[in-house]
Length: 238
Image (cartoon, rainbow, N blue to C red; front, side, top):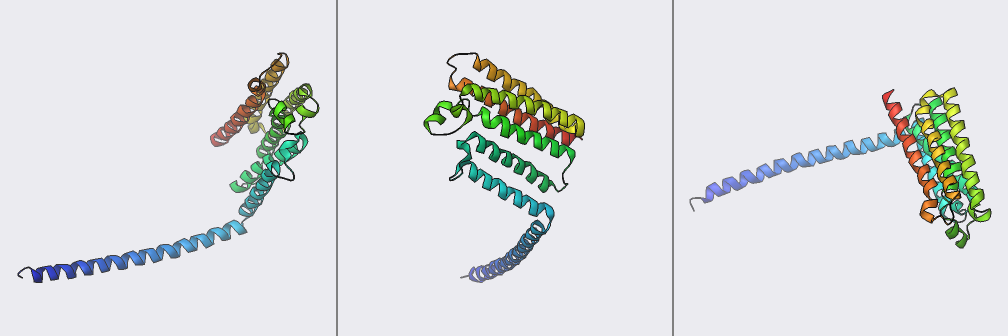
């Protein structure tokens, strides 16, 4: 019984302390909710009203629609080399345009030249090179790629021609209008030689396995990654 008043006093003190803490927490939480809602409204307003926000949203939407057209019915662009090249060109253009819009700096000669070169690299080289290793499966699946309709020899010739064209034209355009873009277009020119070498080597060998026929496409992909990375480094070091 001696300890009862002390315990009661302690319990009242603890209860009052918890109440004060609860009020502080509720006040903090309410303030955080108000600030969060305000930030959301401001973010939506800025994204919707600024040219960068609206432009980026439009380009991302275009990219998603083209991605749907690449694989889904009724377009299924991946089943035809021509449709694939058109859709891949759109995907590449939308990607670089969205990045430019998100940066908010507008188009520059470097951005235009490098974006066009890489978009052409994907549409004209990658869309054909990827089918060299899948011709048998594409034929069985009813696809109408260049390798299926016109044969591997025609697909190889087209890959070599497009790689040489993009490599040479891209480097020349960068040297003329956007020297900084050379950081990316020169690797593309080197990669074009690599792609051509892989295609020519495979054409001279009988019974080339599927994995070996995909060597040109792997060279294309490595070149694409390297070119983008080197341009980012060049822009960051400027």
